[in-house]
Length: 170
Image 1 (cartoon, one colour):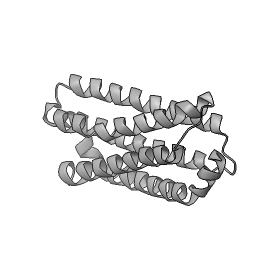
Image 2 (tube, helix red, strand yellow):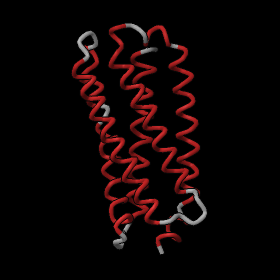
Image 3 (tube, one colour):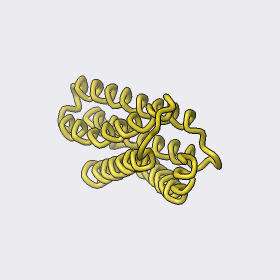
């Protein structure tokens, strides 16, 4: 049942993987073009946000690619969702700590902290979807939970990219 549900969602996961890979590449190119501005001492929090944004694109890509496997195993999918969700939460915590300690980069501290919220929501979706799968419990609407997490990551990272490139480096 779950395998059929996940297979029926594969065209959507293909769209997520294509969008996140493309946008991650564009972010990488755009940041490379503004390397000098990012190296300034006052841009430390913008660098933290850029790193976090790139990681969100990559996390979206990893989950999407895993879901494109021909016959996804529910236990393995649960493990991947939990690992990616926990890793994302740890990275957000680390980014918040670095941002709070950034003495020379106080100007953008509030903006960086606000822009991490949707990533936390996405991590929550992944944990809520992954835990029952890993434990072998009947996972009611796993497809929607995974979709919600992927949407949050894509929205968050796209919005953060826009903020970095237009408002900070533009």
